[in-house]
Image (cartoon, rainbow, N blue to C red; front, side, top):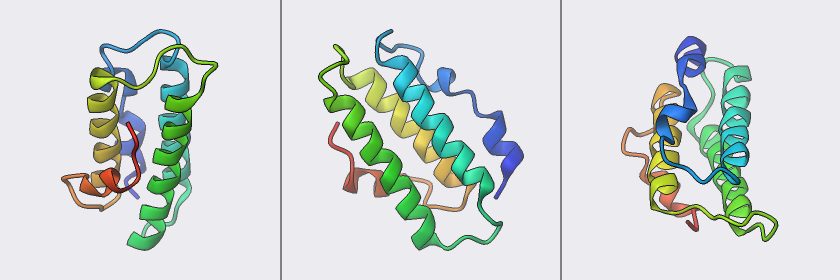
Length: 107
C-alpha cells in the first residue's frame, strides 16, 4: 500500500461543507478505513480491498440512519465522502472511478 499517500489525505478537505453534528462520525470512519488500509500488506487482493470498502460504506450507511444524529448525509457530504473513498481506493489500486461504492451506499 502507499502508506505515505494515504497518510497525506486530509479528510476535512473533502468535506468543506458538512453538518457539525455528523462531521465527527464521518471523519472517524474515514480515519478508521485509512488506518485499516495502512496495515494491509503491499499486495492485498482486490477482493479483500473491496470487502474492506464495503464494510466502511455500510458503516457510513449506519451513521446516516442513526436517529441520535440529527443530520444525515446530504449532497455535500455524499459528494465529499465519495471523493475521499475513491481517492483512498485509487491509492490502494482499485478502479479510479469509484463506481464500486454505489453497490453498497444508501446515501
